[in-house]
View 1 (cartoon, rainbow, N blue to C red):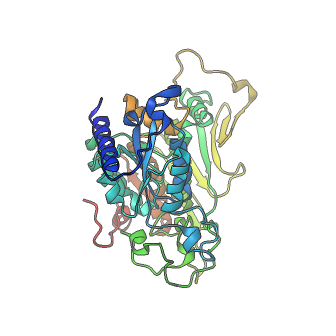
View 2: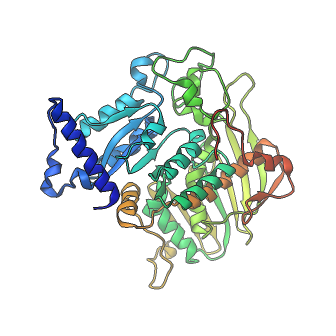
View 3: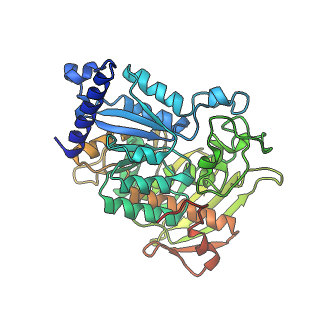
Length: 453
């Protein structure tokens, strides 16, 4: 038995003994008896959820269905949005730590899930092997670094970081800690995107003429409250100051939270980082640039929110970037194929979107031959993370890959916000060339007492 399992078994034994001494009934799931091929609790990978919003809840459902996993705790700064935010956060009826706890307990048919408001309490638990981080982007660096130093394995949602400096720091800490990291870039476990990348890697398209990436526009009203921008008291059950954390102080209003936080540059980078984290990552994979990146950004254009609004990311945008071998990528909120990636070469093209792979002309639609490049294959992004923890397998989306991919999105945002015609980047030193004002945006200050060190 490994050290973690032994510690967990002692913990469970102590809990059982304490319960018996107090006269509490001891509830033992049938899986503890090892029936029907189930994994006994003492041999499961224990997991805690940090961030119980829509995405966090969706992802944890996958881990709840993995017989090798036991979800031990949930953590969020909001208690329960449907009970305390009626009429304020219209579409948030399933969000918060209490709904997440009920989901876990209902799935396991028990009442064993712990609840926390402060993520540091979760990281202090000896009975937790791994954490799933699904908080807004401005919290990722602090929580991920603390988790790695606490020797917890980490599944963290994309976008990886709020800044390039944060991403570099996070990757270095995770590498030194030796914990397993999986980024929520699940397109790396999608057969359509993998096949598209293999076609490019094997030169099936001939010399690439260009790559086009389509992203959706920003500032969609995800929580139904975009018009509610007047400051008001935070609802009962929400620790709003803790939600802000390292971000600048700002008054609460319903338009600010629950998915719409993506349209605030203080918390995220708009859809350039949100969905760019997916599609730009696939471009990196296809070009074999997982630990490098482009060298120049140009044709940077954007529209900005009208005066009097609250959102600060561009509703529409376009930009291009170029690698050292002159491969050019053009990104826009509107492409004729919608959201996706089009690899266009002298012999044909490959278009990949979620659930679709389109290869033209039909003569190119041939299986890979023996000896062709084969890329890392993962069929389930969530089980792949647990595989890596339990069996030492390489995860599909390591943190360094995520850092390099989101760096592209961050650089585009920097160029757009500064209205630059061009921006030059050195992927080896990870520095912007000859632009002090842009270089200053590689990091951002954190509101006290929070700091990344």
